[in-house]
Length: 108
Image (cartoon, rainbow, N blue to C red; front, side, top):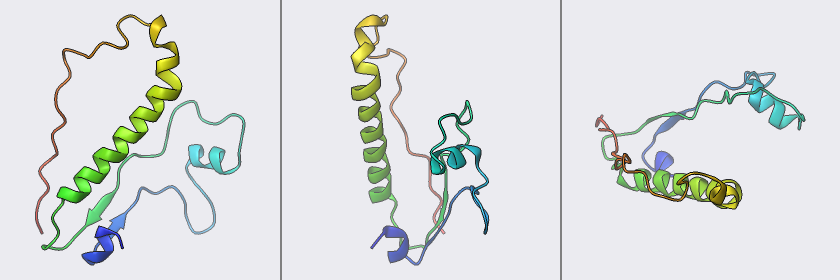
């Protein structure tokens, strides 16, 4: 059971389809297995969750960070790392990198 359901919550996802069809151009291309789609991503990478006062977001924050690291590692392993030696400092950590801070999540 997801945290949202456990706390009688609700998730509002971005509008990408209506009752009869997919309206997002990127999702249309993926769904119809088109060889060419939009040149830029169009699916919003956000959602809105409404949760009750007993909900504690720490577990969700950890799960989201874990998923993002999994995505980032997959991209690194399959796309960046094979060509990293061709770059200029690709494998060096960025000095300007700042720790990710979770936004303040208001309690309802």
